[in-house]
Length: 143
Image (cartoon, rainbow, N blue to C red):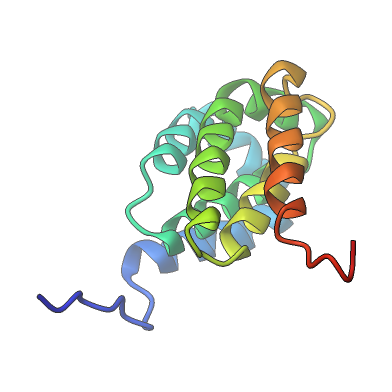
């Protein structure tokens, strides 16, 4: 059975996410409005249950775009932090099975953008696990 390859063309959902990312980078009022409309709750769901790798990447970018103000980073870390941690756990498992690091890097960057508000109880263990996973991939000649 042949697996269908994802299209290189962006769909309407993906174009909408990119448009929101661009607008959120420039307009504080738009960021404030979206936060007031519970967008972080929606992002937690879409990050946890992303339809594709590309959607996960785009929703992570939207999260970063929304979190320019410290109060938004703090709220996002409370609402979206667990979803990011779950995705990072899944991505680390996939990395061990040969997936590249692009998504891990993107989701890690989104999580790092929420600093210093991330819960240490969740992300402290995840950082240690990441170091173990990536450390085991370093050739002996480099280590």
